[in-house]
Image (cartoon, rainbow, N blue to C red; front, side, top):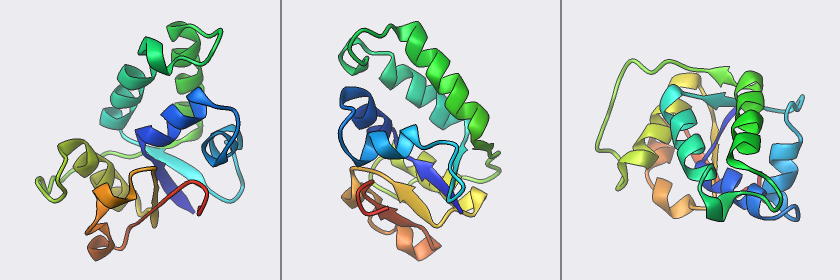
Length: 132
């Protein structure tokens, strides 16, 4: 099954080794799911996770970029040939939804489920890491 990790999940996993976000990210590659990624989402991951406040204790921005390259190597890279914007309230969330739809994902894993209200119309459910 293909899924999309919203940036909020990676931030939560970077900030704490306890919880569902870290467990999910740490399980990649997993036989149960394959993360999907677009160039736009990868750029967002890099920008957000390289901020000082999001770096794991004792890690550098380069450590984070190295991990993101690994994660990207495990992901299905999906090109997106259409845009529906605006569909959701936030253009960054639209980017995530477009990726999920284009890649045939049934789930967007996020801590911001309410931000993806309406994604069900496209057959994509937003769920929290603990529920996934």
